[in-house]
Length: 212
Image (cartoon, rainbow, N blue to C red; front, side):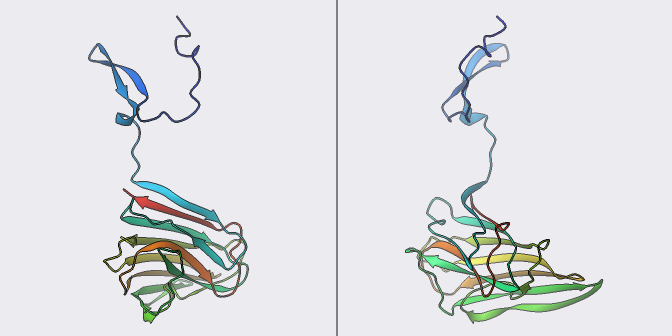
């Protein structure tokens, strides 16, 4: 029968974990649940957004007890020269702006092939970030990769680290690698990017992943 498969109703979606497949186990026909053969992904998308033309991109309730650690990716384009910083939000999704963000790291500047290195960070700031201006340019994107560790736990201080890179000018490339802590134990449910000047252009992309 040449339509024993193609003649059946199409599922047209990813199978459920308990959907069954027929397999030959060394010549013996057996059934197996999809959960045993589906591809595994340790990064689960929990929130996403594109730039909406404002100076704030916030994510309410993106952190939960489901995952302990998170990765945040952002590719950011600005409408005017701007410095972008980050803050956490508490369990009520209220912005945490107290001066208890401690972070430190190093910056590398490549200026037309001439390299320089410097420290980067702050002690008791009201936000964290690379502390560098993202220049407005249609073909210039600033890249952020942020890891947040156990933000939803109320008994421990949330630690984080981040990487940043951006072509700050036509002949200048900046990279920043840093880590820090929010020096108060509080349950955090949300996260936000803040611009001090321009708007996030629509080509900006934001993605938050829970780590299994």
